[in-house]
Length: 475
Image (tube, rainbow, N blue to C red; front, side, top):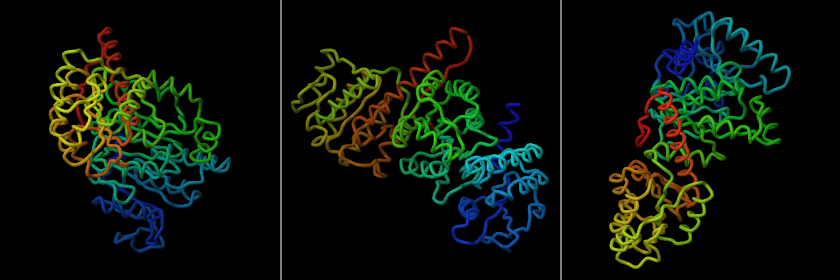
């Protein structure tokens, strides 16, 4: 049954043909929002149903689904809520595998909406159709040339995303794309009347294109199954989740947003820890962790070395290490002597953190020596810049190419990791703009690595499971 479910979901993500019901030429039309980017993505077998239009954006418009001269894999429905069950019935007659119901006005809209959603689901089940939504913005799958928003990259990547927020499902991939991150699949699942987060997590766990799974979730409909699947998937693929609706006010907002029922913060975090799921508290934290998991090799432990030019930021980074569970490595007298020989100007400390004083700004090429020495004696290296100029970035790019351990850099006083830093990321150096944010990301990264090692040890003791290949860049 699991295999059949995965195969049907895969047919939705890789459709041979798509119909958009309710699209028109009018600016602001919701159906048009799907037609235009899918045309731009290069999808060929795309159809439109609208009895009041002869053509939409150059595509012939059909009066109904039964008039389309091809069997359809995916239907995207953007019509009034009261019309959706009948359209789903027509989809069943055409052999459609799945339908994305963009339309709102279902379980998030009170008792009448819940009744309408039950009717929708009954019709879908009779016809063998799987539903994404209602109240969602559907899917983005670049390898299949399927897009749900303008401007999304056409190149496929290795990040799979599940989101109960439509807006976040569209905006986060765009923001991450500016950091060079590419996605395999993105799904906005809305009310989850049929397919839910557990289904998509299971699917992405089997998907060969996906190596990192992230999500925004407000409530879980099959909690036991979700965490059982998460535990299995996290053994081979990291799972990062931002959870909304954990407070009294958030729960109320989640219910009116997607009809989801949220739960206890403490229970949620405890279950995630058991399942190996990494939790985050904001969109920014999620992006910070994606940069670490996407670009860096997994660390073999929690011993960190800090190499810094500014002293104050090094102190705050040390405080963050203590707070988030990283171990500040102690360097032997021999290592400290090597550092003194590598740094020609006097630094205030050859211990950890290593103070390179003005070397990083005035002689970036000399900065590589202490970074390499520190890397030889720790599990990961955190570099704090006081002057992130181009020579400094070039030096870090060379360090990233030669050092096989996780490297991260704080670019303060820069306020954003912009496109000029893409060579740094692609060389395997995760970049942050605040000393504490980088430490937090590395600590969660190390937490997952620790979970993975412990789980693999358990498997080996029980003579089950296999060794996961750990390596740089989830491509």
